[in-house]
Length: 576
Image 1 (tube, rainbow, N blue to C red):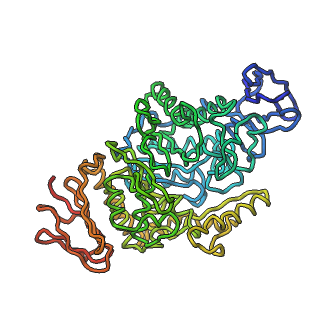
Image 2 (image 1 turned 45 degrees about the vertical axis):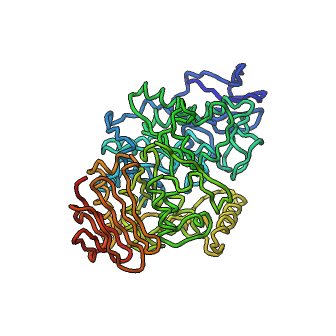
Image 3 (image 1 turned 30 degrees about the horizontal axis):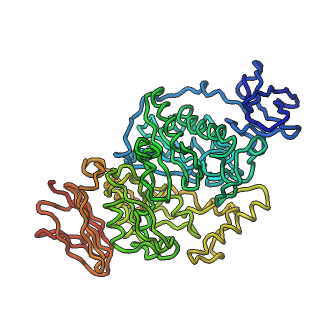
């Protein structure tokens, strides 16, 4: 087996196999290597750098002993895949379901998640988006502080467990996206600087030094990240990647790292015959992320639009703290439904400057929208879901707007049945100083929203994690079952009516009244009417339209008007 590691400044590198040390050969390109035919898949190894270590391989495929342990070799070709042909559902027709492996099921593993996939099929989603699984410190966490980027988290089930989950999704016709983090690495178990200049002091991020994408020796750092992305797509058969917080990726190269990643993913497509969806999470409101490289874009498939969430959330909850101060009007929701970005060059009070730019002729299918996701739920003091903040009637309104709106809808685990469980921020760092710093930092983080530090659960407390586990027995209870049927009906309608997935924003028409707090949206033969005001409203609808779905039994339709009580929504169907 060939072992290679990039350590350009090292004077000596040895391969550690148990107590044995094998001298590695230094190449002119900064790579050290040794070929040992006797080593087989499943053997453990590490690297001793200038007499220190052994350290885990920066490209470790398996970390069974945790982030501070040595690495284990993996033969990706040894896994037997059951599914060789699965649907290539385009993003324009997608309904994405975001899940966190550790809290999705009671056991919190890749294999236990398989047992809930049929629920997702019945729900009608097309894509499963898995929150980060790169190996991180401790057994529990969100996954955004991974340090072994090539190794699936051992507590979840390791490499083969992840492959079984992806395979099981494909067998059920579900495409699978993986959330990956290329803007920083976690603090615990991060040994990359023992090997080379993976980070730079030139830029700083909220997590410290930035990853070195454009300084000396950046070529190999860029190669490291791109190879990681290609591994998930090729060796684990993911159908795409969600790229975390790309606005904190700092790169002034002529070819941005995202452009390079996209270009190499397209080459992989020609080799595998499959399309890979690359989706950026960004708060830049910059459509260049998804524009073609020939017109100065990065060539990604889609980008998240947080403006949709903020507009809907502020309207339904009345929250005005933090970035929500820029939202709360019915006009903001109308803008999100017709322009995607509410702030497309407008002045932002929160930022005290103009923000964003118009999307131009881009289709809505290039933007992912949500009424809830792990960030917007989990980054609250106590992790409340929308149903906890706004109530069930308004949660139904939010679901209807999301699932019938332009853009690619994303659901967060448990949202579909109005789960009673929160989703809180949890960690299990073994270093007491780091654990204390995380706990204290979490409390300071919420000052802008006016949340009391006393209300913030301790991330290190195991109870914080346990509270966040989904309670699947809720699904069969009446009030939860009613919400689930509402989501199923909306998703089925979205998938059945072409006008709801065509992505052409020119065909979307909105009427609203700011003072009375009602809005109607017309998309082809579908009309959505909502009322979140304090009084009953009678709204005109096109001739020939009849009630299809209603959130409240008191909703009526006659003589070309639909009458809605407060906090209700109706979907009417007719002929375009």
